[in-house]
Image (cartoon, rainbow, N blue to C red; front, side):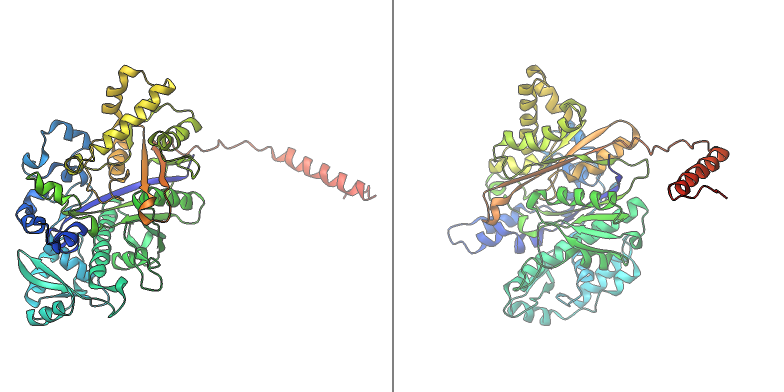
Length: 514
């Protein structure tokens, strides 16, 4: 049993329609394609902020509804908005893009984000009413520049920033010749950093833990920062911690494509369990490249561009307090190099091997959380309902093993599965969005355990054809068992000590015991 617990979680979304159009890979590829008119059509399919907030999966992500509640909302969800939907939720918020531009500027320490002077004043006023933006944060907002200066930077290759079609700033390149420090990459990096900062701030609010209490930060988003000499060698973790006020922390980044967060959470639990650190924050920001990734199919089917939000999260791993759910380090599932890439092999190694290790049946797990992509995003692109496909595979193997009856497969999927509700940035959907929900259910006594599953396509880097999979079980804390104090007979202890001392002297030829 682990001595590490999940003490809290936060989840944030940022509605970024402009960044989607200037930094999303699909849009960039289509923009200069003379045979495609997608880019021109895409603008008429952009959602406004209010629609993004009222979108049911987004409300589930920030904690205003349990994911299972999505089963009771008619699809398509984008045609059935939630009445009275709120920006702030139990775990975080959905931030509008103009405020996020301000947060990017606050997170920038190299004067790469240039904002227009009137916009700076407007956004400073808006951010001053944000419950988590401090006076010190606002001091980081530098005075703005004129539109003429901004337009000159754009002519030199800077990425423009617009709010409601108004030019309000740009992001400059950080080096004249280094492609890894280009303006496009700086937008990626600063968006990742700023969204992670927002998630970390919400984590501190949700847990009541002060930033100074964090010992270590593991950052596990999909992006990697660096320069031409070490392309992924940078450190988002300390950069994020610096802005969030984690003065006593160090940290590093951990990458594993979509499975990265699960690797990071297991590493955090191991560090705490070993006593190296007391409090570890696992955090990730959004991936701008994935914005509008399936946009071609959404536009072709007359849908809004649903991939218009950056996702972020943070989880606090702490020493066992006897209350919060534990991470079972004695039943880690891992897809080994020798396992093979078939879906059956992946589920055997990631789901059933760890269950067998501690004598559990598949029905003993209340909820499985594999790839929790929103099916409304993936189905139009032909990928189907990814979460449901995972649950069906888990159930099918259970039937083959004799753990589940064949006629129980559908009910197993419905009871033990979680509807997909997360944005399609790979590291965000893969298991982690349900941790906050499950933790609350366990603490209120309506759930016992869940399995968090991370899966990744390692072949995307063209370094291997291997697949990745890793999992852990989070479950109800059994409490800290204290040994009953033993009654000590002092007279017997003293007599035993004299006897042993006498034997010691006798062995050395001395019989006169003092």
